[in-house]
Image 1: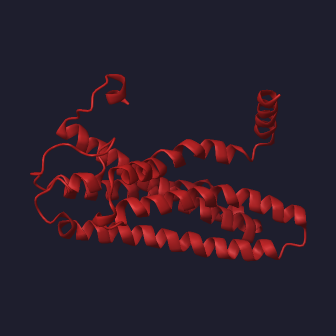
Image 2: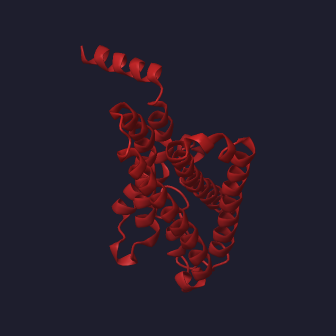
Image 3: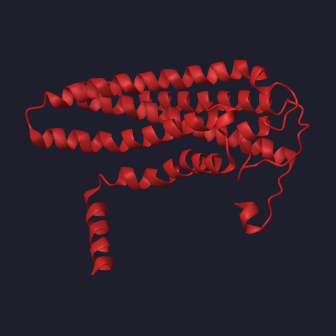
Length: 229
């Protein structure tokens, strides 16, 4: 944002490191919180009578602390590993922010082998959360399909589908950005993928989740019809 306001593309080494740390911290924590939200929906639909005991204020605080703590650890590992590598391929990052894959391209060492420990840790966390989300939604959809009331099924789907859409967009684009082979890399593709996983999910989160609010939904419909007429 500062670069856009001052019309500059320069950033200091320390600023780039801080940007990587904050970016990984926020994106990792976002993913872990999305995992917790999958558990929230599982309990609400599959175990509604136990919702108050399983997801009380203390449990929510502990899960939120675990999400932010895991995000902090992930950010520290990636930042220290990335910026401990010698950069000898210039100092121009071919992206609109300091993204780790593009910083690694500037290193003259075999960065992917150097980062193998950090990558294993991160991939393990991501896969573990992804499997948890998938299993949660398998149980949710099984419970929803057994509901005798069509209104109940519609309410359950309307609660789950926005969250599922954000998770799908976030996971698919982030996976492409960080795990695609270098041979498939191109400036235009990298730019599109980076925008899809770093800008779009946080931007549409408030809109998607607030669509469950009937008053906001009615107001949006009125605005659309006013502009259409």
